[in-house]
Length: 327
Image (cartoon, rainbow, N blue to C red):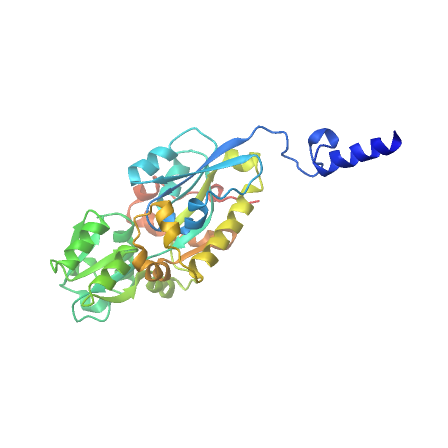
């Protein structure tokens, strides 16, 4: 009987049934499994989590990560303006500030991608100084691309009013105008920039606005374009989720820039990014996750510039340090 008892005890331990079926080192075991939405917009933010999204990657015990791709900016914002505590998201950095100033309970965990705006042209120009009196296309009057471009012009002692700026409602519309020759010079974002340049060899990349930003502000990475945020509720309940998510995004960086065909992942994720141009898009997208500990000053600098142009772009005021997640 003693031998039988030992055998039964051994089997219970092997199958994890000892101690009432709860492993001693699993602090979350026995808790009800919750669903946490991971929301991100179409485009580069979706590309930054391509492997995770297409494979439905799970990385936290007792948590079901539910990936949700937002097709439009309106859909993204609507999904975030909720009292639901179980949300992680990738958003434009300006939207992160707006949500914080609305007291929606979001914290910035880090930067997912840096500036991916490019000056492109089919004209004989070599730099910003050649843009005076030239018609130059750009999207969104008073929006981030416009503010970043105007700031860079100003820092180079070029009056934005000396350019003939023409505003377009979307990157797709602007790229179509360039392809048709209706406009010859423009500030275009990824992935539209790489697709256009591959299809139209007469259009050249003149410069990267992110590289110009680095020079002007003597920083290493440029301006934070896409930001990882999470609700305080889920961070408090699962304090390790931020670290695990950061590790996953760092692995995504390596995977995206590494060798291997990613076309199947694109198809599975149903992203609008064309597979034929993916290597160029990845190269120019500046996807590079960095935690907020490494990038807090970049946000303070960036938000100050947005505020000086129009404080409404960040929700009425520069966020205080409470916007940053620290653990």
